[in-house]
Image (cartoon, rainbow, N blue to C red; front, side, top):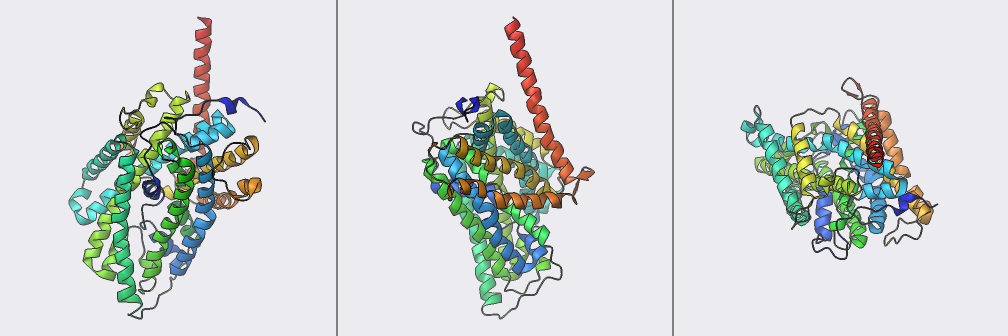
Length: 458
């Protein structure tokens, strides 16, 4: 089937073969993706609390197989076939048309409002555990503003600066949990003869939803494809390596804690530092608190890099004002987009978004559905498109790879009926946000049509 969509120019910062600034290699990309998806072991507490040790380990093993791996395969193929700035927005626009491409970007940017406000707040929450002074009054908001400003400046300096920062943060973040695993096994496990105590209440649904949230965000790395060395090969390798790293970073600390005899009910949001103090002493608590700050900073920093490429690609397509196409003369970073988004996120600091996990999964789920649809549509419509990496199984594999992720997303939608946001169900609230994207798109189209009519009349 031949349509006009196939002939529309797709956004690109520079040609992959000619750009001198595309120097993001495999391991910096892995580190950046790690923070876009995970940020380390922090956040797994509710899975252990809800499902117990055995249930949590099982969930953390199964979720990447059914949820992350299919997504990584999809991204590997599409990023190798269309390694362009804007990533998933470009894929959906090319495969399904401008309207759906706009919705893909809209969903991601709306989700960022809920997502990005939480990371400076997490940084302040961990900082206040060491220095309570910063948790009083508006001091936390000021710290949050400092985080937003520093990350904006790092991103304007370019993707290599962000990725190398992520690489060092990854190393610093991993070491405390390595120490925790060693102390848990040495002092409380292998040589102490402790036995695990079972949880008295198992909430598998809550555990699965939190695990899904901890394993989502793989497509965020695709938006910087034009600034990655050899993206045709680099993306598929980076996705698969990062899936394994994230899974191990979740499972190994939980498995080590399982031999300590600490009750699963002791795991609550933000409790890893306190549990580390029980296992190894107060010094490790301090180290893990600092690690929590590094995790929050690293996630915010990497996601600024991802989200800021969407306005750039949309502006290059004429969907946003041309000012968003401006890039820094040296780093080639979209500085107007970075500053605009940073200001928007700064206004969200201090807001209390309840039930973030449910609404985030809901909005992210629809954007992911569009990406799997783009994978299948491009296989049918453009079978000759060069694909250095392909989802295994031919055309059937391209369609089947999204089945399990979509089933899990359907499960999360059913769960959202019981959550309340702004006096309504999380599902209803999410549907309003989704519908708003279509309203904005058609209003924009009507305005452009009217402007063209005026010009033609003149």
